[in-house]
Length: 326
Image 1: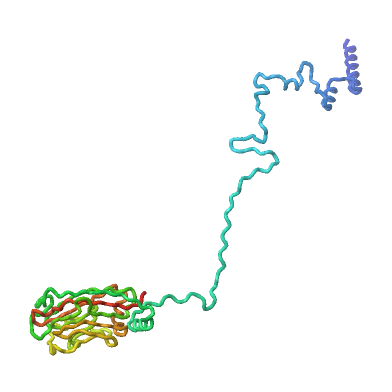
Image 2: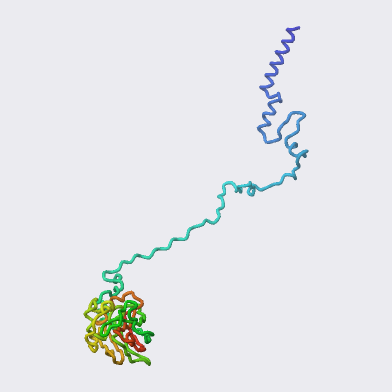
């Protein structure tokens, strides 16, 4: 029995091998050939074709539930997708404005560069005198009227540095002060004269007119040796005259003007005042007025022992200043 079964098994094996070589067996061979064709794909019995699975309705979604979005407009939260192989769009690119072209450098030709600055303001008497004498075309003028009232009291003998009464000695002095406004610039000349209703001056005993401490005139020249000079100009200082004996009440007076003119009344007489100081006369004084806005123009009157001493009458003085502006 066993020999017969083995013979049958061998026969089936040979038959199977022969069928494979002749193409008569259609199992796996047909599926291999179908994989190489473009027709339908064979599926095992009892299976459903793939295209039928895709076409069937699903229990979860239907074809209408899936929105179709073109790939060109797909967006994420941060990035906009662009089509493949397309260059990304670029917005406008900010550019800086072109820098201005600097002007070409200029080099002054020899002798054509900036000239020297303005000439320095004259300071010394010599500089002032020269500037005033050579620049008359630049002159300017300013005017002022100063009023000197009769002093309300006579000499204060024994008070305020004055000595007691003593006849024929310089014992006391009084001052009537006024302020002369100065222009901005170099003072070249000053003119002073009586004006208005009070053009006549009378005084007792002696009188001087001073610009700051500079003596412009003094009615008795015998006292000049007691005064100090600065740049040739006498400086008023009553302390140097106090207690000096009066040797000549009628002695001539002194005036600073040498090239100009000077007029004033003598002791115990009445008359006008007129003074005209040129640059040559005034330069030593003008040098002391540099950068000054005003100066004291005072009347100084002395006395010996009388109740009428240290007195002068009302007087108005018109002043004219010729100057070089700054």
